Image (cartoon, rainbow, N blue to C red; front, top):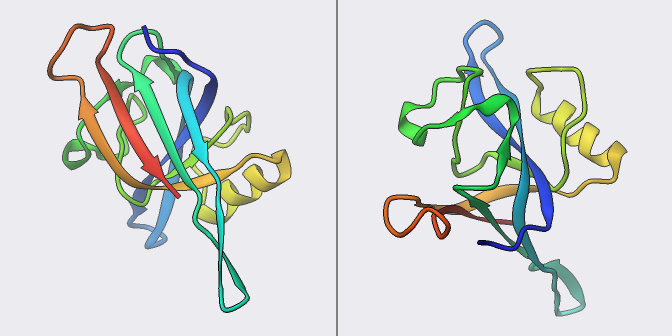
Amino acid sequence: MMTTNADITIFNAVYDKTTRNEKFIPTVIRNVSFYASETVNTNDGVLTDQSAYKIRIPYLGAEIDGRRKYVPEERYNGDSSTWTIRHGDLIAIGAYAGNTAILTRAEASEWASSAGIKMISITDYADNTARGCDSTKHWRIGGR
């Protein structure tokens, strides 16, 4: 079994045809593995953040909000019974406790900031649930 040390919230983006804006649907996932490699580099006196984050969501053992089902990104349509992993979607390192089911990017960022929770953007991911025994299957996410 995978060692788990965090809860996260994935904010999946969906396009709102009415407002012609991106909206985000939060999905809380408990019991994930989180690793942060936080570094700062300096170049000609300018500090740059080079932090990288790795998250692994175990196929078995993770508690997914409302028993939502994972769907590949190309099949995700914003249905409240599903969740996905996509480049550019947001992850909060903590459980979303708000009452709003659909948020704007600004609202999601404001919530994370007011709660003192780090918000990262998904830069890469892999679905490692096709092979291996159930105890080693997982979704791997990288972010900055």
